[in-house]
Image 1 (spheres, helix red, strand yellow):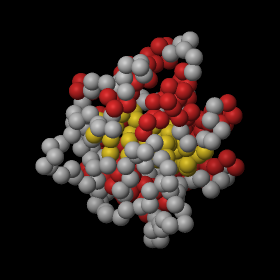
Image 2 (cartoon, rainbow, N blue to C red):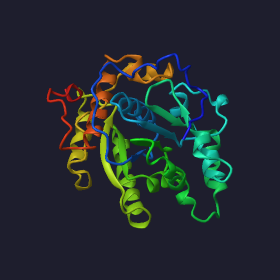
Image 3 (tube, rainbow, N blue to C red):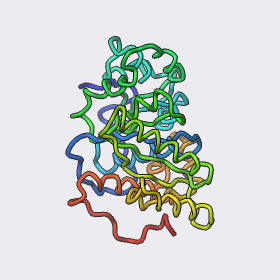
Image 4 (spheres, helix red, strand yellow):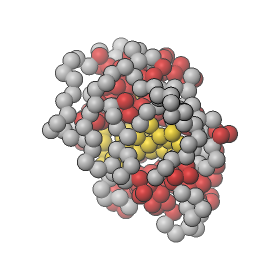
Length: 302
C-alpha cells in the first residue's frame, strides 16, 4: 500500500529519530491493536496515546495512531494541520465504499509513525450511524487491510462510552486503561471495566486488558499513593498495573503546545523518561521470553 504523500518530508531529508535511545525491542508475532481508553476527559489519555506511539516507534515498531476523538488532539499533537486533512477516519467509517484506508493514513514527521487523522465531524458519527446494521463493526472492517503493515495500531478513543468507543473496543485485541491519580478518576474506573466486560460478552470475546497506566502521578501526595494501592488490589487488574507511572511534568504540556512528542521535545525530562519506560514495558509483552526490561530502579515510583 502506498501512503498519501501529504505531510511527508522530501526523500533527501532524513526524518528525526524519536527520543535519545537506540534500543530496539522484539516485534509482536502479529499486529497488536490497542484501544487507549477512559470515559473521563482530562486523564492524559490523548497525551499518552501520542507519546506511547512515539515511544514504540522509537523502539523500531511500525505504528499507526488512529484519532477517534472529535477534538482531534492526537492529530494536531503530531503536527498535522486539520485544514490540510483531505480525508479523515470519519470519512472512512461513514462512507467506506467511497474512501479507502489508503486515502486516510498520513505520514508524520517521525520515523515509523503514521496517523489516521480525526475530524470534528466525528461528533456526528453516532447520529449518522443510527439505524445502520453492523455499525459497531465499521472500524474493525476498516483496519483489516493493515494487518501486515504495522506492528501496533493505537486507537485514541473519545472520553465517553458511545458508539465510537464501542467500535474501538470491538476492533481491538487489547485495551490500555489510562487512569489519572485522582479520586474522581478512580470512581469511574468501575464503569469502564463493566463496559469492557460487556464488550467481551457481546462483541469481542478475545479482548483483554493490556494494562493500566497511572497518569499525573505525584509520589509526594497521599492521594496518588492511595490510588495506586486501590487499583493494585482490584481482582480484575491483578498483575496488570504497569510498573511505570507517568509523573506530573510541565514539559509534557509544553510539548503538546509545541505539537511534538515529549520524547522529541525534551528527551531528558521526567515525562520523556516515563513514556520511554512505559513503551518498553508494552514492547516487552510482544515476546516476554526474549524482552529484557531495565533492572534499574524505576524513578517514576520514587
